[in-house]
Image 1: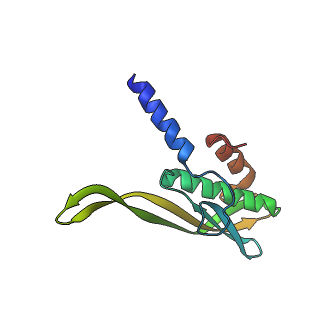
Image 2: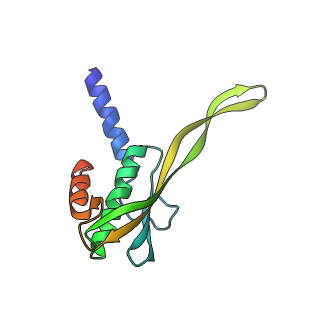
Image 3: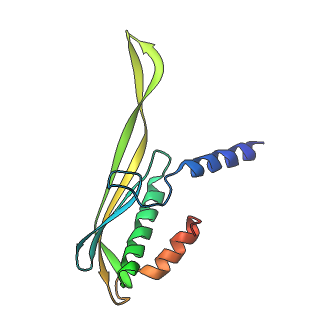
Length: 141
């Protein structure tokens, strides 16, 4: 019974995680990328409160690989990486001293990568290989 509860909980968390999709703007959930100059791109992935930092990092890497491939590059390296977290304040419903107790709960990860792409397979990340591996890991088509 306990295994069933754990499995259902994981399934529910996975279903609520930020989907891998293009964001409407840089602050929306999903990915967003910008060409900085020839061969240089900024890739942002914004997760929601159910997206782990590890998964947000993986999806940012996946998008970086796809951006490189879409622009006829074979490999890339990370020039700069930042991780930010937006914390949400949640009302606990507990009344204390005439006020309400609140709790900071569930942070939303935002991963920003600046990547330099190469036409050759000479940089750290091989775009096609990474794309294939990460799509399999996260069960994306």
